[in-house]
Image (cartoon, rainbow, N blue to C red; front, side, top):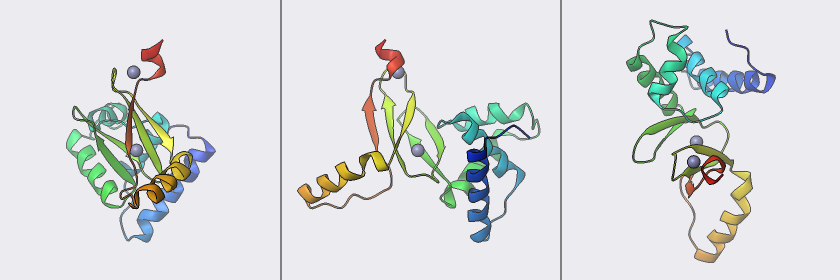
Length: 146
Ligand SMILES: [Zn+2]
Ligand SMILES: [Zn+2]
């Protein structure tokens, strides 16, 4: 078991409880994938997640990672983001948007609350109601700008 922070442990417990309440199984693969995502604090590709896990779980193959990610996505615990070159998976238990670096492809999360007022203003100006829980802004990251 890797060392997890108290906040991560709470998020992990909440995700486990959510799945169990939905009548879904909480497996070692699910637990390990969610922990890897919490530890990385990033959206990772299935291959990237597999690399993180395979040293401790040599029997966990890439297809298990894909299958488990699909199951977690069906429960709404994980969402996926395709930027045209790769699909990355991130935890969806906290509402957020994304900003994607056009140069290096790095991805950061923007807490949804940071954009709530802006979106509400845009909705009243356009008369539209935004669908979907997250959007991706294009940008250039700090590392690429320096
Ligand atoms: Zn995300
Ligand atoms: Zn960059």
